[in-house]
Structure formats: C-alpha cells, structure tokens
Image (cartoon, rainbow, N blue to C red; front, side, top):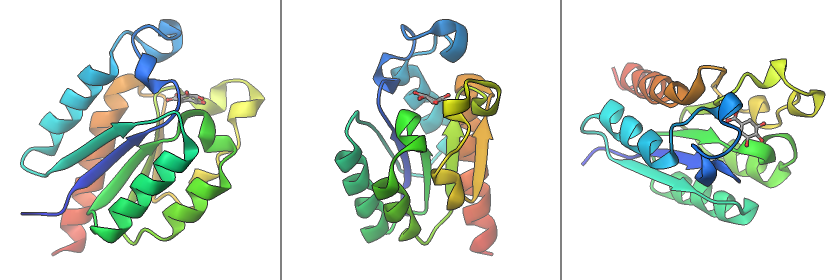
Length: 148
Ligand code: DHK
C-alpha cells in the first residue's frame, strides 16, 4: 500500500460552514474531507482536526514515523504562534503544503507572519475551501515527480 497523505487542521476548523462564512464559506469540514479523499484517488488519506497544539504535533510525529508521503496542513490560528508545530514539521522529510482558506496576507496584520511558511514547500492561501483540493493535487504531484 502506498504511503499516506496527512491532512491536518487546527483550531476552529471543525466549525467550517458555521464560522464566518463570509471569510471561510459554507463548506463543512466533512465536505472538505470528502473533497480531499476524492482528489487523492487511491492514495490513503489521514484527515484530522484538533484545537490542541500538542495533538497536532503528535500527528506530525506519526507522519514522520510512518513515513507519510506528504503533509497538507492548515494550522489555523496556530500558524502564527506555534514553534512546536514548526519544530515538528522540520523533522518531516517529505513535501509540506501550508494551506489557508482565506488570503491571510489580505487580512488583519496578526495573520501576516506565518511560522509554518519557514519550512513549507509551498503555501496556498485565498482559494477558499477548494484550496484543499489544489493542495492535495500539488502534494501528490511533488511526490510522484520525486519518485520518478
Ligand atoms: C484559518 C484560521 O482559523 C485563521 O486563524 C487563519 C485560516 C486563517 C484559513 O484561512 O484557513 O488565520
């Protein structure tokens, strides 16, 4: 079985669909997960969400140890504050796609400095929930190209 694609989501993303729909849209996290699994095709997907920094760190360690093929991560508010998430991602050998539903650079200044961008292979921001599909496709393309 091919190695998994980890898709990790941070705080408040469990409320997608009900949370500031003018920013994040009406798509629920369950619908996002379904979109990601469809985009991944036969590639196994681990799709998780947590409000807790340590849980996200432990899932990144799981991806490191598997090893997973790639990580797509929307750290949400932890993007801008979490050294532990950055440090964990530094240990992951595969591609890391940082994803934000909104264009964080067009929002309040507090959302402008991502710690995760210091290690991410690529950053996708502002495509709305469909950005997840783009992130999955990009991650798997990088994986496929590296295996050629
Ligand atoms: C989601 C959040 O919860 C915010 O804290 C980020 C990100 C933006 C998003 O656009 O997906 O700043």
